[in-house]
Length: 344
Image (cartoon, rainbow, N blue to C red; front, side, top):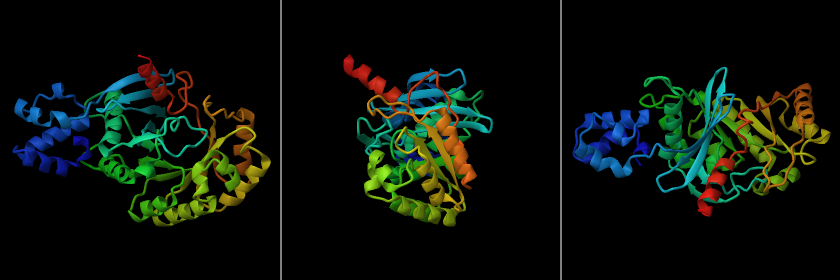
């Protein structure tokens, strides 16, 4: 796929096809702008014929728009697979949530993305394609960059697709491309400990976000199978290593599940785990997934949980809910499209 290439790699590819270097630069510009093949007017037909099989779709299968400006996208890939992402407006800029895999094999019980298991990894170019499509859909002019922040929190476990994800970050960060700073990129992982260390050693400085969702290992094992492999202590030790290498504050995501992880004892345990470590806890109201059967703790319990953490010396806030009128947890738009396709 052409979007898997950096600008230099793309120019080399074009030269090997027998065309001059400047054609590679023209092609790169068309790709970053999200142009379809029939929108490219400065490249000759014989050139376009050569590269058409490798050219991305830039195709939105379905889009839902909220009254608060949030947009939920379902993208159809060249092989027919469907992935999704969410565009969110904030005071500090526009954030795009992207997927890194088709499905997921982590099996977290509060998440809809893993209901069908893992189908395949996305390439670096397929992850970048999501950003390019959303940027094109939301910009006001050709030269504007509508996306200011990117979070790898859609379907899939990013560190389970390490090589493609890290190449995507380099492509996204490149001055030749969209030039989004690593400080404006967040990556969410359920805690693949060896890859957290590798990520730090490989020199990345993005915001590391940990899907923790429990204050002790026994509770975590009830909802997150990965807890049977890596303990919370191992994850926090890896996070401290990441902070030491990068100086970046780590974010811990904590989805409140009624009668599972929302009690006073859990507040105390979580406070003891994190107090004194430069981190932030993002309390997340549970999105109901009927196949999972877990219930949300309710607004009062959610805000009490966050306030209690703060009183105990741990930075914490409740995640702002966006796009409630377009509904559904991560994975539900994709799931509905799959069901519709299967019923045809």
